[in-house]
Image 1 (cartoon, rainbow, N blue to C red):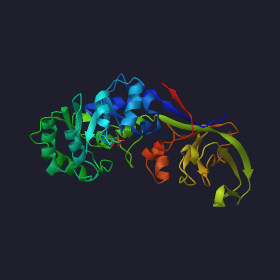
Image 2 (tube, rainbow, N blue to C red; image 1 turned 135 degrees about the horizontal axis):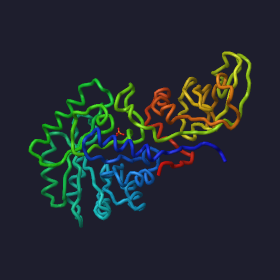
Image 3 (cartoon, protein in one colour; image 1 turned 90 degrees about the vertical axis):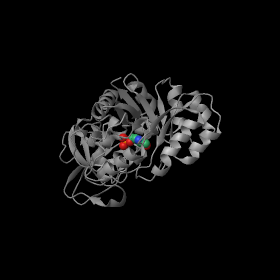
Image 4 (tube, rainbow, N blue to C red; image 1 turned 60 degrees about the horizontal axis):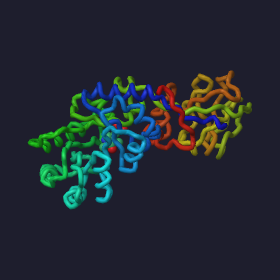
Length: 357
Ligand SMILES: *Cc1c(COP(=O)(O)O)cnc(C)c1O
């Protein structure tokens, strides 16, 4: 059997969820959209079910997968519905629904529903992606109430730059939110992971942590609270071959990397078809046989090469950690010019194994 695996530590997932609740001092919807950022939505939801105040996913297809697996907890649809015909299913499965656009509000007004909806009304406080404008917001709230189809409204917004700890925009977005919610008696939801970790004065009734649940930092710089996270996924494989090369020998496609001295080179069963980023350059850290070394040459579809010159004990079959508790996915992401979110979501082909049930 090919040794490439993603090990998912559910104990670490629960630790991170509890940390999110502790730091936010609020209820927390565990964001498990996009198959729990590649970690497996159903397994993660089952592991968190006893603790979690609820879950958040992108769309009804993701929510119905959770309901089909027997998850009874609240599930919020972060993009709401895409067409009015989904409203019947939303009511039937007791899903919570974001309204981020006036056309959705109008659809609710015009569509009969059997059970009153639970709506999270989104305000655009400056990200300019989704949400009603501040000028539309109070009227939108009143229209939802007047529709008679809504049992409960939560006021929400989303930060564009909470992962940048110095910038003023997060405070500005907060001020826009507080002004727009004046006089509206409802619960609020603001914080994503970077806000939970890095903006402790942002308080609301519901946090929406995503990436931090999986133990990855949303920041590009070290941060004290992020250091308390436990990585959930270990992407691992084994050496499938080891060779000795003299100086000046090319390794891999393109031959751009050449050995700077006589080298031992290992081949790992892991490539971009598994989700390891092809953009990861020579020098990206990797753990072989418990020792830190680096990948060399271009990442191929099914294999990549590592420098074993300083890892003399490594042999065919030695274990390799591509990311996990010793090499952080966020460090690989920075090397590859991307973010841990994308690193996790790109995971494919490798079987997932769960520990810490
Ligand atoms: C994805 C998402 C989150 C979670 O963001 P993280 O940065 O992963 O914590 C929170 N809120 C909304 C609206 C989202 O789309």
